[in-house]
Image (cartoon, rainbow, N blue to C red; front, side, top):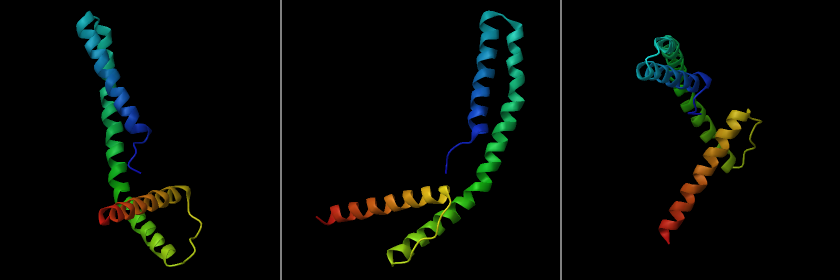
Length: 111
């Protein structure tokens, strides 16, 4: 989670290509290179997709983290965990490692 999808990275790459083409056109006096600016609407469209996706996924990530924390709490009390999707498994591992780090840090402070 918190990672860009193909359209986020693609939008950045296309923006660089458009900027490079415009720079080349102005420095080398090659008017045809200004055609790279035609990529600008595509860049904007891809970034709008990325923002929409992020705004839809942010609340879901919060819910998933809350769910995983509940699972870890139940596991610490002795409950068996159900089979999880690979994404939730990854989130569970991340949360477990974060808890271990916090406990280690607290134990180190007490010394």
